[in-house]
Length: 159
Length: 175
Image 1 (cartoon, rainbow over the protein chains, first blue to last red):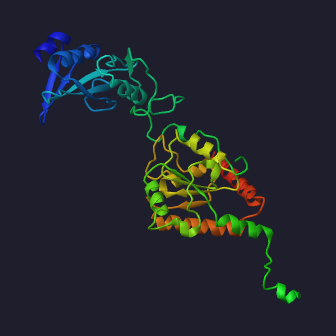
Image 2 (cartoon, helix red, strand yellow; image 1 turned 180 degrees about the horizontal axis):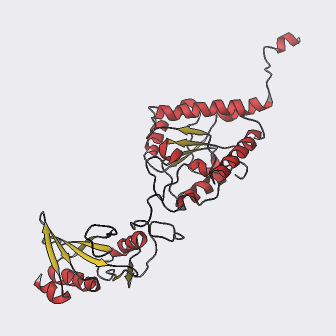
Image 3 (tube, chains in turn green, brown; image 1 turned 90 degrees about the vertical axis):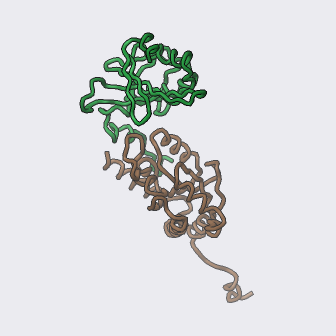
């Protein structure tokens, strides 16, 4: 932790039921993950995902990114968090550290609209390409804004 | 040969009924299985329930060789254009069974991406309730569809024109 603090500055550490969580500044996520991977043996990226804290009690930031790391030699697990905000939520991509982050970051972009600077191919991965909004944001209604009804009707006469 | 002898060997019927009788007993299903209903659909085709007893065992995975589309499972908005394309590729006359709650109404998946009933966008002849329906229910739907084809079928598909008008009317109402 001291090494991490020296590398990226302000770091807060918490522990819950044996799981360690580290919050780093969004600007230094890439540096922190690189340090953890190269120097501290956290060589496996399990998941990249995100939480939208809109209307959440006591939340200061809008989006909380989650990086789940595992050290395959030490069998240690670590959660790295970083918070980003509107209007332009951006973090540096970690595809250069883990190739597998490619699709994970595309999913976060698709669902939350968080940009990953330096991502080689930041396209939507689940939703259709003509989709214009980010459906897992809390300000997007659960039943959508009419996208599911926006199709031509095939009748017996036309088909 | 007297006319009385002929009566044993000749049956008279209407051409529409004869054609419908041929069609109803050789339905070739196109399995459009996207979810757990697809498992029941497979069970329906397998030996225990054996849809072959009702003359529709030949599941074809090419839409051009089918005349009965069984939509089994939820259809999401990304899949719907595929569903419509496959429906358009099937030769006429063709029918559609909407199998299960999700295909018929969206089921519990009332979310932004799940189509709330395929009958909004393609014509449907039979709805099978259930989550998922038992194979017996699907077989009953096939039997009912056969009865419907026998009852309404015409050689040139005039009944489809009527259904088309009804569907257009309903689509306009929903808008």
